Image (cartoon, rainbow, N blue to C red):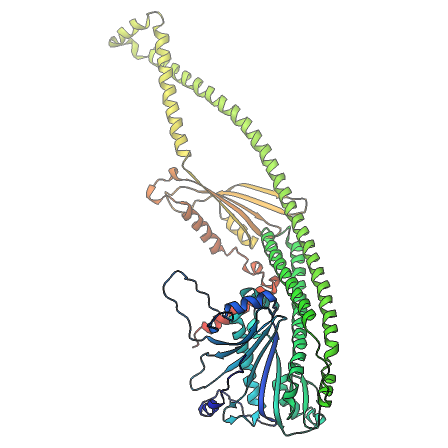
Length: 637
């Protein structure tokens, strides 16, 4: 493909802009004609490269365009609004399944007065190595030469952030998820490797003189991290190794770019493997915390099972993604070739110092070791699943035992109710007859009304055969019918029942709940002690203070006094017993009145409900991001 474009004709623009530097710079080392190459490893494969080529239009007649990671959430609408901060992509060359090289122009907003002309040359490869390169034409008023390492350090920070924005805009969501997994949701600030190539370094000293443990090393630390070693690869060329990259300076330094890029391929995988290993131990720590929750809180915390299931599902998903990343790493190490040793003396010296020949075998051993660790984590997760299954079965068994006990009680109550209903019917019939006959006896007794003249005809009728018997039966039916209607009226009032069953399973301060119950006239108290020693307390009381004329709700509170959990609350309320129909409670009113009482008494133990100390690492990172965003949004006084 064509070579990348140059912005040398715009170098003068940087001399008139402002800066945000507040430090007094002490410049000790400067570089001439500087090139920057930032490299990183991103899990790639042949299919990902094919999809990437398709996304940026490499195979189309009109290639490239503007790329943004934004997702159109209203695809059916006729308008689209996007931020102008996008990346312009211009394809240089590609192969469908191996690589793509393109030029990316960054168009991000800068602070007022700051001029930044930034164009990257980007190379993405199927083995996962991503290169972002640029030629530094000017920094501030320094055009081409005399570039200070102080300025270069600030430039590298911007390059690292912008390079993340570039690649995140064009890779798939799946790859972004893999990176967020490894870097705990902070993939935009992931560490990369810096390669700085300069035609000349001022002052030009020997390698040993640069490693002075003083101002020279401090200068190098700004751009390549803690210095490890420095070598003279030729009379004029110097190589400096750092924790985050390396610097090569000298008139022949650019001849070694292919060898340096091959080194970066391995060193980026090395950095990624280190992050992978750290993330794996964070995952193991999360699994150990899950084990502790199952062991210590499984039987005590009613809500623990839900948290345990969520943690296991998330951990299982993370392990699957780690296994996929491991597959990409092994494939990359199988694809990457070790370059041959250069024929010239300087090239051989550099090849020896880079130690490329042994890096591949070391990385393969480390990756194989990671495979064993991931396998162990997967088996550990299976153990946690088995423990969760046992915990769930124990709870189901406890519920079954409780249901069996309740069912036995219900059967006994049903048999008693049937007998009681039969006896009640007989008593009603008998009582109606007794009442009717007693009434007639009073009417026809010695001092009754039948002795008066106007009742004489009734007496004559009563002397007829079976007349008195018929009158008695009629009165019996009349009184029985009246009692039945009154019974139906009482039954009608009893049927206007509203029942609310609230399941809390929340931590409480039991002393405050006891204090609340002590203010009530409770009519029922039950204490159940399990084989493990857990004491479940049930109180039933009639609420008298929720409003005059509104009826008297019956409240049943069940809580675990041993582990301080409010389990269930049941509210029974007869709407038809309320004297004022306009003030009758509905279900929401009853629940709100109860919650108001609980809140006033401050029965909730919010500190114990906070499980942030046992949260998954990725959740802790997300909480930190939310707190940071809230701090930014909070206005300052």
